[in-house]
Image: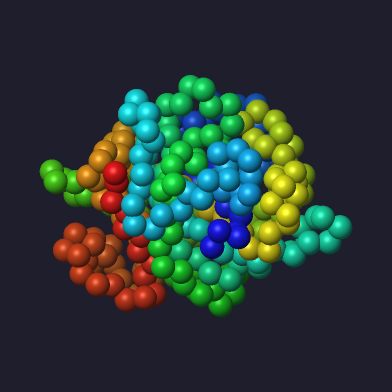
Length: 272
């Protein structure tokens, strides 16, 4: 797992950046399409000599930053495990082989951060992956057509739906359009505003063959949009087949601790 590279996409679900208070971070970033994501950020780069070299995925524990003044929010997302192919040090093909629920937990109020990546890798448990599901084909008619994403937060006092229940088809960019956009950004994104030069990062990582890329956080429910994580909370991010299960069934299963089948991707992280 340590040999992968970890990237995330910012702004691939309408209104998430505004809810998260991060829209102003991207005011200098112009896109050809108003619905296009804003860019890609690294969250883990194997062997990197900065904070990005810290392995930050823990599928059981979410470790809060040492600075207690930093506010952290859950970011429920879908992550794709992809095989990368290169030619002349350029990415020429991206093949998604698995997907899963993912928590791209992020610091909201770090005024010293000049890059979005600085809000992402804040501890050895900044991120978490649910059980992975095989992708038959990453296009219309494939397994992802039938999946939705939802998240919950549980504490000793409450159990809330944290993020909206959203179909994967609700992503602004998805399937081939998303893959072409990712390939272009990996090859051409420059160090500008809150974004970084990605071709340099791939070079620093010795052109890894595998990539985990999180494809954008969904919108928050009213109860979640200003709810920061606290020690003792439990975060759940769930990707489920909405042709087999309805939201009430998933909600009740998570709330009661019932076992769900392996074709439901569930991430459960205790916050410490």
